Amino acid sequence: MAKAYHDADADLSLIQAKKVAIIGYGSQGHAHALNLKDSGVDVRVGLRKDSPNADRARKAGLQVDTVAEVSKWADVIMNLTPDQTAAKVYHAEIEPNMKPNVTLMFAHGFNIRFRTITPPATADVSLVAPKGPGHRVREVFTEGGGIPGLVAVEQDASGHALALALSYAKGIGCTRAGVLETTFTEETETDLFGEQAVLCGGTSALVKAGFETLVEAGYQPELAYFEVLHELKLIVDLMYRGGLEYMRHSISDTAEWGDYVAGPRIVTPEVKKAMKGLLNDIQDGSFAKRFIVENETGRHEFTRIRKQEAAHQIEKVGAELRKSMPFLDPVVVKDGQVHKA
Ligand code: NDP
Ligand code: MG
Ligand code: MG
Image (cartoon, rainbow, N blue to C red; front, side, top):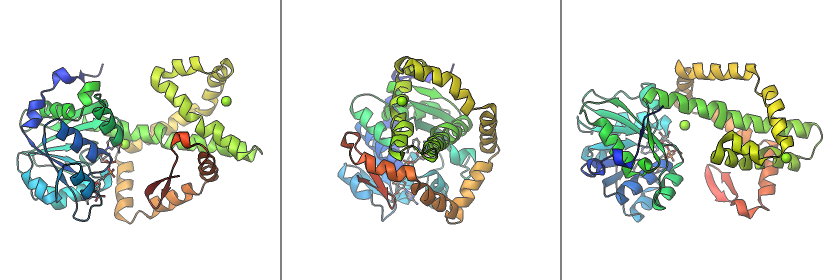
């Protein structure tokens, strides 16, 4: 059984006694900064000079400075810039300014696991990773709850790294729901595998293949969209509440029987072998290396595939259908910005 920590296992006064710099004010950054502030922690936000988020943070009552300034000031520095940016920000602005006995924190182990950041031996290095998107970390906290999380310690120079990480986790609400102990390696490798094999890569490919199969067989694209994409949410919501058994309890017997006989014909032993291949590429660092090189060389492949995927027929059909479904609060992404549909 994984070791779990709850509110009673964490002492909030530890993080309340520290100066905490949150670097970045995106999905996770805004939630961590605001939750910590509400928990009575001395927080400052570090952003680049021209950050479009600086005003938002100031309006929310937070002090905003440059990354260099807050890094000089802080006892604890939580790096919440994107994974492909975190090492650049660390080397340029955090490392030259931070105190020798600083606590460096992350919400994902990528840069420590793949050694794009190697902190000095005098620093504590820990991880608090909420298992949910930032807006939920904030919303659930303001409602009195918390999003579950993971905690890990990579380097314990002070001898108190775990206690402080748990205190931080309490400050952002995670111990209300429970925080599981892990390592940077386990967190990073399972997180990458989950998003590649199942959550993002596997699911997107499955949905597209199902849609294409129906449309190529002459069925109407609108029906195909409803059957393979729209209804997926209803199924996932059932799984989320009561596991596969509750989902299967709620669907028709026809659907349940189809689940049992068809599932293994789709996810064959070959598919599982491919999953093991993905896991191997994650473990031996080749996935990380490719992603890092892609980012360092202008993201041409990334941009090309993003554009190609956005042009898929399922996206056009879906955008039209969602216009008539205001209840699901439809949105569109245009030039990287989200707009109401
Ligand atoms: P976002 O992309 O939402 O936010 C990034 C923030 O970093 C922005 O405020 C951006 O600044 C800032 N930033 C980018 N480049 C720089 C720079 N050069 N100097 C200073 N600031 C910069 O990131 P996420 O919140 O999604 O991810 C942060 C971390 O949290 C990652 O490690 C991720 O893996 C982890 N995580 C994310 C989850 C999620 O749901 N999103 C879930 C769990 C963990 P600007 O305001 O100027 O644009
Ligand atoms: Mg991830
Ligand atoms: Mg059906």
